[in-house]
Length: 401
Image (cartoon, rainbow, N blue to C red; front, side, top):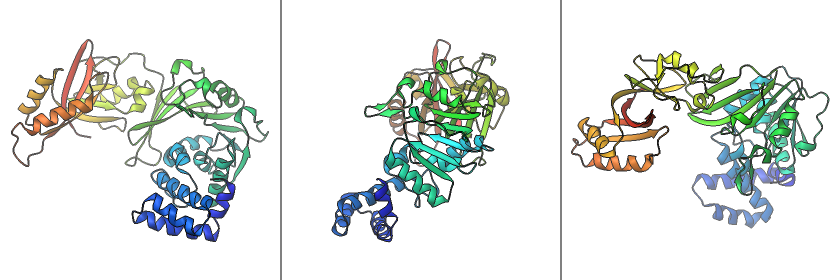
């Protein structure tokens, strides 16, 4: 969709076409059928624009509460951060005078940033900028757009904060080398270092040893999945490392811990009464030593983020399982142990284990289904595969939280 498409989509004729096509979508009509129907009364370009917007809004529903009013195509919606994540990162820009969102895409982050200060949204794609402008108007937010390559853009003198989101994909898929991003990470760092406050969105799997010194690295999970990593600069820095958990069952601001990377202070021991499976943000931020004392727990292995303890502890940074049995991993021995425990179905998870958990789970559940358990009886357990020193072990446990 380009600017002319958006102008038409927002006209009375475009809104009528959207409403009719949306109603057909809701009734289960196929895309090709909807497209053919649109072409009877509209140009091919208009028909494609309607379909692109409907697909974009459908993809955006899980991320934006008002997705039905916003303007996205499917690709830009899929690339946008969930709004709860964007609001979390935008909060660090409170008190800024003017924020430059460099590499703004369709404006998901710009919408959150503009709650705190006027935003200058910069991108080299005029179609994406048209989406930003439309979304800013929908929400009545102070967002100005500018078409430029981030590498070539000169920041206006009144910009005192910068948010950068380098493009990390090309026609071949994900680009793993940060210096092949657009802009390259070194350029993004130079820009971020030139203003009082800045953040750079980076891939969660980025090599930490390659990052500049003096920055904060924050890892953010949303509903249990690691979704984002951010490098913070200047006045935005609050700690060397941070792990943040965002989830529907938590308050709007989620839960966050900070500290220095792990030093190996957490003791190592055999499984106790409970297994704690840490949120992925904690392990990635190397803050296991921060969380372990909160749980009165110890590590099972120095290289994995499973903890164990004998006390019941609740934490947004870990799932708790009550341990029933553990043993060196051997599939037959594990299967026999599950049968002896009366287990009817298992889920398998792993850390530092080479086992194909999906295949193992299928084989175990097939064996348990034919083991003679009483009809109607359900006894579901989790099998955690991990390393303990040189040993490969299986831990049978029941999820409690």
